[in-house]
Image (cartoon, rainbow, N blue to C red; front, side, top):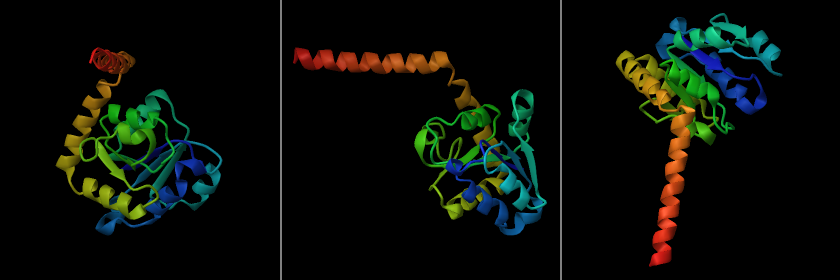
Length: 181
């Protein structure tokens, strides 16, 4: 199962998502089911055009959202406008690799080829290639899921603030060294 979680809005590149849903993925078309979780200004329009192999849940939260991530083989996230991408980190925390646009804050969350794949924004062929690669390689998907979950555990606020603190320390040390030279 493939999933998308997020607002159903133009800035999330719903057009690429729609193209991916409607494009057969080689010989696997009959086996592919999509789960779309979210709401927004384009939700009703998208819902009306979805094929039979798509379940549209609307907005999910807490346990239902975690279950949606966990039951997915991978999450597809075409948005190129994210400053951080909470849904990407949530997916990784559930051990679900992400195929996403190589843009914005998401490119700093996903390690390409390790916790998911980063694709050229708005390039459905790039997304399809990555999706196909993961769907046809269960071992790769499993390893990415393990790496994704491990990475997500390092992203607590304590870890993030510690990393930021260390970066400040490095800059201060570097400036002191330059002043003494």
